[in-house]
Length: 295
Image 1 (tube, rainbow, N blue to C red):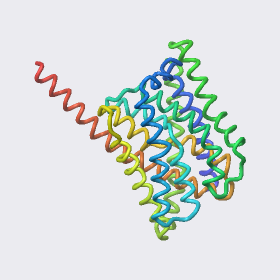
Image 2 (cartoon, rainbow, N blue to C red):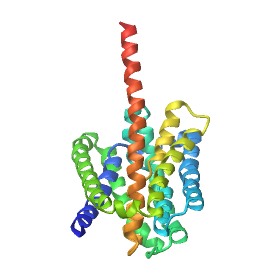
Image 3 (cartoon, rainbow, N blue to C red):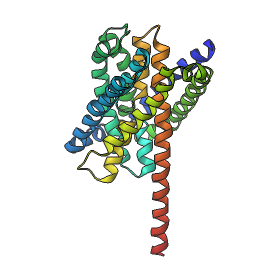
């Protein structure tokens, strides 16, 4: 198990660097500031990710008993906004891909700024000071992100050549993460579900994701595709930022915090994939129907 944990840890670092670099390669500086022109969407996105979703995590911790480590992981993933995967979701659901990428980058930058100062107050057991956590976030997230944006802004052909390689590295690393930690998780599954707190933690991860998706989708005043982008952006948390904080700020309790973060991430992928599949099928059926009527 020690080998699997070490391999999974290496894969996490590769995934963080590759995914953030890839996100940067998808937008220019002009694209990045585009969401600022839609103040309502930006405001609702900030409200959803930094108020509503963290409050969902706090409410679940208050009303459902769980151990401190799992609660810490839930809080951590609850305040981590700006998941890079929202771009792929927008692509399949017919949303605005550029807008989804730009919003995720803005949310990531805010997450990097806020999280280091929130960690010592809301997570028991954090060992690193805010500046140390922020330094890790800047090195692992902001620097590859900015590097990608600079390359995209200066040379689109170069960015186009690099993207498939970085995308491959990101996909391979996430596969290794789920394989290694999946084996570790399954090996502990009986131990986890045999206790009331462990079984509840699985339910909490599912409920958290459903509430994050549902409540943020209900925010009014936006067209359907914008509501979808908003909901999926909030339902998919920024696991990359959460993982950086775990390895920067935790020592002996990192395994349990990591377990909760991975639980929420896995169930978010499953639930969102189902919803995206339903939306994608409806889009394809509608396009076929439109082509048939046009003929």
